[in-house]
Image (cartoon, rainbow, N blue to C red; front, side):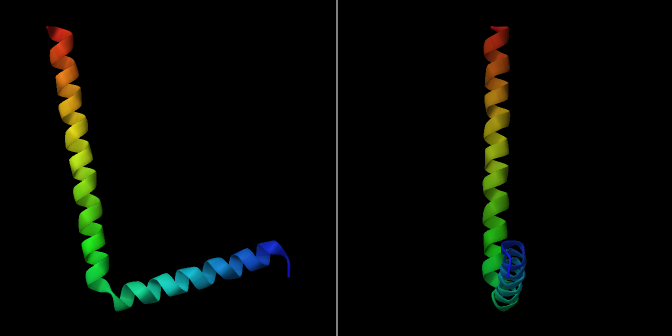
Length: 60
């Protein structure tokens, strides 16, 4: 078998495993997604606060 075919099979198997795991563990998926979006929102808030701070320093 060539490397491209092997890589394709590996990708398909990994995707199938991941779909099955997510189907069996919906609470873990939900917790992970909530944690991801919370961290993303916190990062966005920090960026906005830093931008506001830079604007205040530029005006002073």
